[in-house]
Structures are given as C-alpha cells and as structure tokens.
Image 1 (cartoon, rainbow, N blue to C red):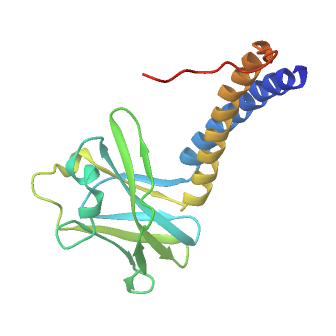
Image 2 (tube, one colour):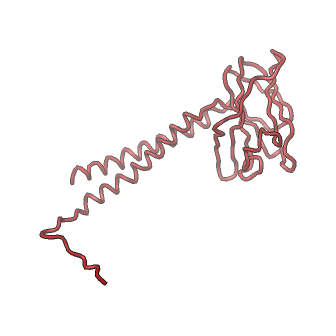
Image 3 (tube, rainbow, N blue to C red):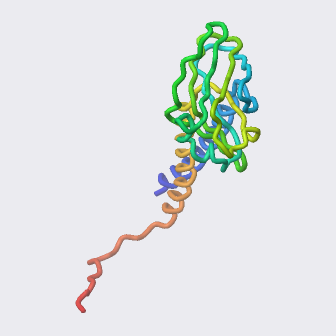
Length: 194
C-alpha cells in the first residue's frame, strides 16, 4: 500500500497546484476580457479598439429583478440593446447570448445578454429601449467584453478537477494507512431467522 500513499500525497500536491492556478487564471480571464464599462444610459457612444464579436453584459445589484430573471431581458417585456454603427448608417448584427455567462460577487452580478458582431474598430452608439418599470437604471452598468464562455467552462472544470484531487489525495493517503487485515478462516455466518 505504499504506492497508494504516494499517489495520495501526489494528488494533494498536484490538486493544490491545479486549483490555485485555475482560480488565478479564471480571475484574470474575467478581468482581462473587459473592453468597456459604462453606466446604463438610454444612448451613449462607445469606442471599440478591435473588430470582432463583443458581448454586452448587464451589471447591477445581485438580487435586482432584471438580473434575477435574465430570461425576461431581450423579450417583448424586457429592454432591447442595440449597437448602431454611424460609419455604415445601420445597426450592428446581434444575437442573444445562448450561454448567459454570469459573474457574481456578494453584492454585484454581471449577466451576458447580447453578442454584437462589430465589423471594424471605432465609435459606435449603444442604446437601450424599454427598461422594465420599477427597476432603477442608475444602479446598473453596461460591460462590453470579448465572448469567452468556452474558456470559462474549461477553467471551471480545471477548478473542479483540482478540488477533487486536493480532497481525494488525503483520502487515499488515510485509507492506505488504515489497512484492514484479511479474515482468517471461514467468514462469519449471520443468523437472520426471527
């Protein structure tokens, strides 16, 4: 059983390293993908430095109605976000975010809602229409990021793997120390007659 003990210690060390690196990497990914943060206004100019897909997130108080029920956003009863391209004189093509990635803290939460296909860099006009009644728009912000749902899922899976190794390593080590001696002779018989 010394090999099980060695694997247990190795699992603890490897799991701790994977866990720490994955958590750090996820934090850097979430912070590093932010292109712009702005207060929620009916109309505002945003400048994009690179062409490509841009995901619009709505950020606000954690238990606010528009964030607690994100499926209501973008429908007929929720707000409509649009990115207008003044160079082309039309709206930028957009699609709803299928994954609806969320980043949450104790007080604030960010939910991905719409992906815009910005074909070039430069100034754009971001607009929001039909904000839900009773929700204070001053408590919310708009955050534009690069879509990174796949990368986030990969890092979260690495965190789960690191946690399993960190817990499983000591369990394997303890089990290797508590060896049970095999029974000598016939196994005990149970009399279950009542």
